[in-house]
Length: 631
Image (cartoon, rainbow, N blue to C red; front, side, top):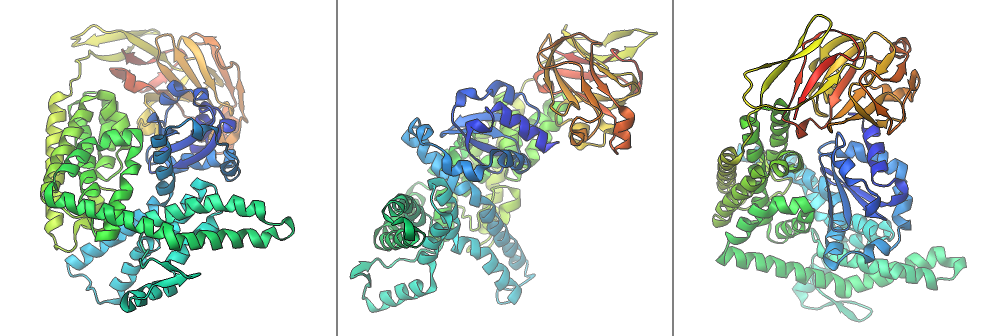
């Protein structure tokens, strides 16, 4: 997949860089903040190859990409110059949001950037748990101690990590925000708190007592503190004399913010976190099954709207205050496994090779902890797998809730992070976590397999005859319409699986064939319109009269030629017929530049059709049928 090309197309479809006031990304989504949502072409985006779905929630315009999201994010961020737009964005979009939307957007913006660090720490803890459980290392060894403090670093210094992302969200100086985090974690302050607890005498700042609290691994205090600093900083800027503003602005900002943090905001955050922890303990004592049951069944719906990021901090807070989490992560584990199982059931039952391949890949990703490809690619699309995943997730959540299964390490809930359940109870929590995951898998898989229905379609193939093309139908059970896709060039027709680019070979962009052209004129493969001529002219998208979207991509990685050796003969919106010349290509020039000339012809919206039947490998003439799309 050409990430630069996909990023450029996404940016244009959301209204261009002028419409983007902010952009972050999580494990699978680009999260835009747009000046005007109406400028975004949502329907076109949803059908763009490489885009799994689009969600508008919490004041964000979310484009679901999948595991490659980071590669797509980078070119967009470079074009938008987000370092500048972050501080220039106006307040108008915020005013249009409800309080709930603004809260979710804030929490998401703060926690999303630090998730890789938290995941890394959780995985290190999981590795340690496995090594010690099988007695490969002991807890007194240097190796254990070093890896342990490496993992603890992200948790202990969590306030500093959060300070950086919170500062970017609240539009204040990130380095002074991190300084606030450092104030809460400074060894001298920690020692003073310990001594104060022993002596019973309060620490005082300007004669005002400071609450005795430890802020390592805390979440709420630093968020409140940075929010307050974002209010203080502009006031400090305003009152500071211009000649000495460089000195007085940071002085006033840190002195006021630091004092208020130690006097009030830190203690408030600490107390609120304690209340949450006590509430969790209360739930575990009387109705331990309730919250995991509800979360296990509704997590897919939360992910659909992006509001799951409002739940994750509770799990982190539970683990930081009590040492483990019995609510969020165990329930999320059941939900993720259930989504993967529902998708696997579709992969086994479907007769469509395109859906089978997508469902298999998405299912593997889901059981490993990343569910968006399964959710948007299969479960939401066919509805019954989504219902099945909710049922299976609730069943698994009920079990882990009843057994009060504890998660000690965090990470993205899935098979890879199961060692995070090895802890205070030895293997007990791990065993019950595995049983809960198995229940979620079996219930979801069985339900999805029973509910998923696929209409029987005719089995067809293409046959070449003497100078003509005819469609031969065998074992036809249902009469169906078809759309013919023709060769864009004279040459050799080859299977798409033989193309060296895995994006095409694995049919990630859709089903298709490939042509090795012998002539330099590329023609339209369908009757319809030109949907898009890429700026680099190496590829053209077509829309057939019946609605099939066909991409002709001349050569591999030829986008790097920036239009050299290509001459477009049509423009966006032009009407074309099969055989209409659309492109002139210097094949020898492309090959001399070191690029392959094999030309994939892809039905990019293959998933919208019952099947795409491809022809046999052979010598081919331009405008000769190579595929049939079964409606």
